[in-house]
Image (tube, rainbow, N blue to C red):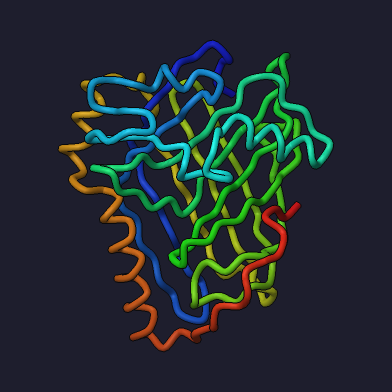
Amino acid sequence: MLPESAAAQIGFGRVMHARLHPALHRFDYPVYFLRLPIHDLASAETRWLSLNRFNLLSFHEADHGDGGNCLNWVHDLLNEYGLVANGEIWLTTFPRVLGYAFKPVSFWHCHRADGRLVAVLAEVNNTFGEHHVYLLRTDDPDATLHADKAFHVSPFFPVRGRYTFGFASRPDFFRARIDYDDGSGDALRTAWWGRLEPLTARACLRAFFAYPLMTWGVIARIHLQALRLFIKRVPFFRKPPTPLNEVTE
């Protein structure tokens, strides 16, 4: 895990999706992302990255949780489930680029004061403007974690089955994987990984110009891959009602 005293970081890496049935379909693409200490969000600000205001890159608390103060939201959520994270809470997420963001998933690693992990929150957004949180209790950063699927993400998968999560987090590297079993076997494997470095103004400029309009690219690729799946005649599932509970444990 990252040391509690570490400052905000930026990661450069890739995202991969591999569908296993009923049609094989794989893609991966380069991305950059933020790794933020929620107790010290001010450490993320640079000339080219701002908090809660417009810039080339930005992080807005309105994009997460209940749209208010991130630290209060995550503590309230954990307290509701009998958990206390009195150490650092690290958020791994995509930034806004020129004010626009789409964040398919963000990960909150929540720690005790002694640095031990309490839980990971997987905060998922879909293209309908809805979000949901999977609460994964664990004190082992290398554990394999599971959650029943409860939230509609892709129209090419039903809302049933189970997710398997795995993480690797070091001072210079982050990786998350989410595998999905739709009830008839392994259906999807995904991974998100990258090398971490200090979040500096120079790194923000490099990210912005190396990956122009990245967040627009994320949403464009989602629709492009949906078209390809439609052409492959992958079954389509209508969107069910939004879950009544924000959190699935």
